[in-house]
Amino acid sequence: MIKKLPNFLSKDELKLAQQYWTLKEYSLAPCLQAPNAFSLYADFLSETFLVAKKDVAEKALGESLLSAYSFSRVYYHDSKLETHHDRPSCEVSISLNIDADREWPLWFHALGEDEKPLQGQEACPLTLKPGEACLYEGFKYDHWRETYKGKRCMQVFLHYVRKNGKYTSFAKDGRQHFGQSLHESTKNVWK
Image (cartoon, rainbow, N blue to C red; front, side, top):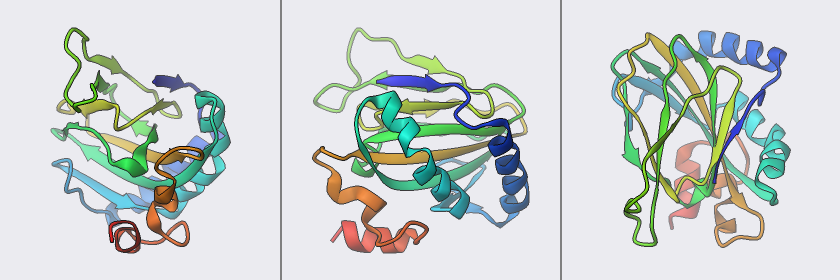
């Protein structure tokens, strides 16, 4: 399932997030997954959106969810996101556009049981405006972004697992509390 969520953030929420990330941006670490990008696991504002917007995600999906973790990334000119599919903590994901000076599609290609792209199906792009989000099943689709030709694009990713699914042990991504570091997550989940 891939579902666009218009007006995921209210105008006030979006303005707050844009101001916050303008201030926070320069404290981020280089991203290991995307060149010319900076990222942060479990930022407090993003974790707040993860918890506060869970009901919106549940309504869009039609199922109960458990919050896993958030991830925030700012991309710059010539950055790209390599083709990948997600880990179990990202059973249901939301990609949220906070700010961008140019449209930049997120591409999806459905995967088969063998985790290879389904033959006969085309990859499909989805473009989001600031404040809009996209809900998708991150391990059922390869997804990527081609080279960014704008100056800056800020995205927040909210990850969930199904409350009655097989990945419930990945709730909170293995952490005891929201806002804890990636180290805490991997220590508890990936024993």
